[in-house]
Length: 237
Image 1 (cartoon, rainbow, N blue to C red):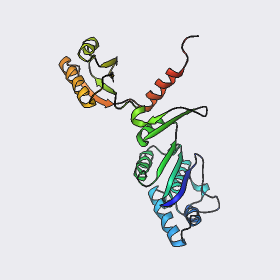
Image 2: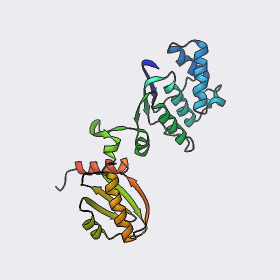
Image 3: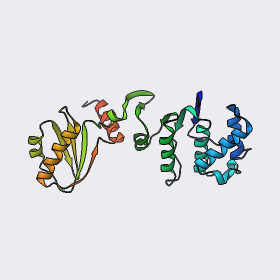
Image 4: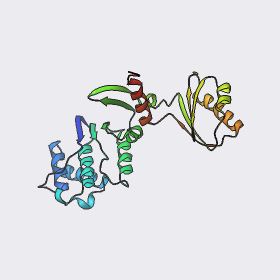
């Protein structure tokens, strides 16, 4: 890994119109100080990783938007950078390829620090450990993903039948409950082991025969953002 090197993937970037993909990546690799043979090897490796090996001899005019995005990924990770800046990394990418790119990003987390800018909050939720929310150039919220998702205090239970919320509230005094079919949202105000708290919740639901279809810890990043945004808005007039 080259100390201090930064990889960059802008939202709109393209290879040189005068060179093939292989030539462009070799050029960028040589600018990092690699010898010609090493640069070629690195270029071939990343063209393969982003499924562009069969397009190595193509030029910019022969590429779709999605192919240009894949080339930008290869360019960003070329040469094992310490820091990689990714701007809307899967925008315009074929839906079948986007999961593969996200898997690649997760894999590279152990080799590089990834800084991702995206409006796709579900993608950030999947890839990031820490998030900063910006509105009009100002930071309005930030924290670990676990804190933002309330993963240690909130649980969502999908039910096939409505529960008796009043009875649950009597049984679980350390919980705030909200049911909107088919989902019961439980916010724990009681401190303690989340595992033990959820065990009490599930036992109470089973006793009611509410029909548990699924359980998930925390809320989505989108829900967290909208909740905090509503809290920032002035009430009344």
